Image (tube, rainbow, N blue to C red):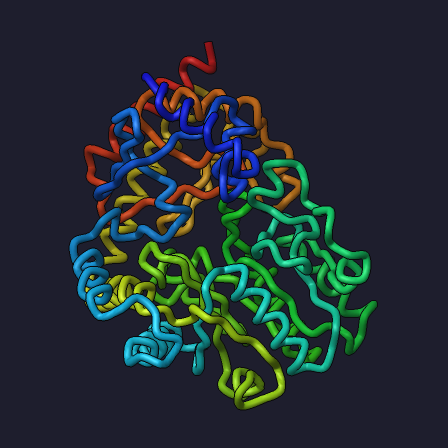
Length: 431
């Protein structure tokens, strides 16, 4: 596989872009080599500037649930751009988007659009503190909620990959307001509530993690967290930036049967454009300016282009009766094939999947349920597997600690080719 143009492009990029990338997770530091530069994408495939084609499971880190360059989304963007790309004033699409989000996710009665997942989580946390008049927040080891100061304490995703979960630049004061618990360990949460009575504003978590790989919460854990929040007057925030409209029409909260007080969204609701949102009970959301004292604003919030792409995507998800059934079948076929490879080759590993999100963990453990389990994974083995997969035309996230995503555009042929490539890669690694 020739990647000469990507190598040259990266050498040029590092001259004026830190690390040559505008988001650390795009770097290939943990897997070796240089990142690929992509020139186009269609359906389930992406093509780099050397004209190498790959079956894509990064999906722009989750948003492309319809596949790349869906014709309806592209047409909506075209028609919207003709009328202008930004007004700094309300548009009808913003209200239509809010109505549809509230219809699809029943726990959301009111929603505020922003421009990124990080902006959504930062704003939701400020709102929770303003509403409860409390300072402390509980987050979980390995959960990533964007690069806001409050969240870079034992964070997942790129911070975990690069070995910097506690970022320089985060003040001791900010860090002291963030309490850390262990995912899928209810006792670690209850002990914090016991120690900091009437001081905890919110508990924020990924209801299904994607930023330390896919980990599903146990029923005991997630039900217990909901109960503890209710009993202590603490808001429960589900960070569904990744899982929202991805693992089910109603997000992870539909799958788990839990209603959070606030939900953060992103990725899919922008249809591939920059976007974020946070919403929940109207009583809480009405504390936001201009109705209430909690301030948050954004020049490009509700941007027409993002609304057009996102609204078109959500309408397709909402109006296609068997959409999530089809998606589940595709993801199940892929994960079953990968699992069969592991068993056939007696290769140590675990497949975790919820809906169309999945992770292959390179570990000798029998299961992966929390941050400690994740940290036992063999990252060097993953790096070798990643490079072999790439050479076979399979594009996955360049990190052991990320989720993979199946789109409705993936064909049976795509999935089988991926399973076969995985088998060959594992066989080479075993020899």
